[in-house]
Amino acid sequence: MARNITALILKSISALIIAEMLFACENKIEDVELFSNKGIIAMETGDEVEILFSENGIIRVKMLVKRMERYGGDRPYIDMKNGVQLFFFDSAGNTSSTLQSDKAINYINEDRLEASGNVVVTNNEDQKIQTEFLVWEADEKDAEKKIWSDKFVTITTKNEILMGDGFEARQDFSKYKIKKLKGTVTIKEEEEDNED
Image 1 (cartoon, one colour):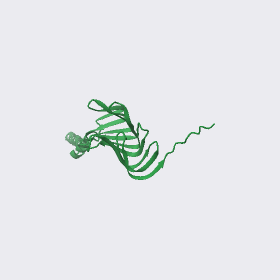
Image 2 (tube, one colour):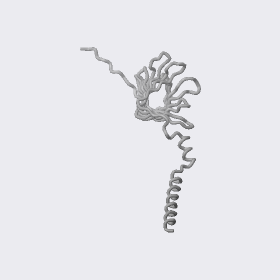
Image 3 (cartoon, one colour):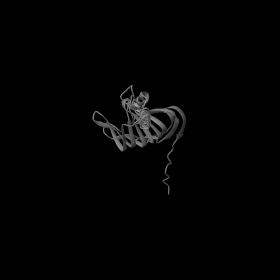
Image 4 (cartoon, helix red, strand yellow):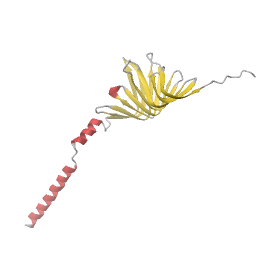
């Protein structure tokens, strides 16, 4: 009889342990859906990645990324960290402008990239944009790509430095406007004195 009681106690303890393990490992369906729908777990990762974007077989953008993580979900995106460089090409394949930043997020289905942290855009005309946040996206009004920001911006040209809040520009920076101009500095080149 003592054996039966001991065996019953051991079976009861074993059943309790198994039941506790089963219930302790349970995930709520809502939590599982949250992770799978929001793309919290990176589907792909890579270091020192080069991405090429083309239109009609012509390379238009080359992107160099130090660390890349691609996420899925309803709004899939590529999270780029530790430095991003973009090279924009004209129809002849020449570099028309460049963009670099500390990090960026590329929303895959939206033709939109958000760059942040020490963002610098340059073009072949020695013009430069500096800001902390910038968006590069397709313009719905025409086929032209554009860059814009609603943050403080400094635009440097050969003749002046413009400062203000927000701007819009073509991707190649050939046309631009500052939304709220706060200051202008004129740059004068020093004339060389040819007298000896």
